[in-house]
Image (tube, rainbow, N blue to C red; front, side):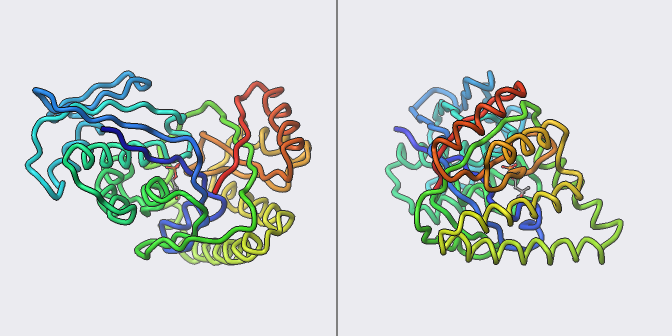
Length: 301
Ligand code: PMV
């Protein structure tokens, strides 16, 4: 009995989304697959992370598993072993923990003979995300459940966008892992220090996001790339970029990307570059790899 949760990239609007600004996101082909089988004791085995947690384990994985099992509509559930195969880098801004939560929920549901809609799974996985992220906007788990290209606003249903063609992206991984919770808290401290200035940045990101949405719907990659670049400046001003990320972003732009930015929580993790064709994508991948970082090309949405 297995379930799948997708990884995602945030095209524009990360962090601002925590404060009610809409964000644009796209589901990836890669994600997490979880398999649930009846067992003597409940546990979650997550091989690539080298972690295996029982229900009583005092770890985020153990707490998250306990939360979704206790809140399951068919609770109490019989003991179950869940095994997860993670095909995303963790702590890299690609929504790995949310993809794991969605995959686990779907695997549990399948075993319990329950058919839940994507929207129901997105809602029920919010408690999983709270364990990992403290104050999540809900974007990651909603995208992990739905996929596609979408506009997400906190507390509102996901709005799916019709894009002319799938987006071709290069994803570069800095190899530095960062904690989404810590980065969200860092941004919150900047807001506490100077709320008026913070609100101006939020307004600016809101404007970029609404223009990017128009560009996406019109298939205008040039405008979308420029808007991504502008969003990157504002994210860097919130101290979410790193030398490694800046190096990759600069190399991607020099190799012909339409735009490039941090994706997700920043402080490490991944950057994305929008490219027009597979050929340009290959050049961007080469340029990032030449710096010593891992990169891959993918279609999103
Ligand atoms: O780094 P990720 O993939 O977990 O993305 C987090 C996105 C934030 O906007 C930074 C936080 C959130 O809850 O939306």
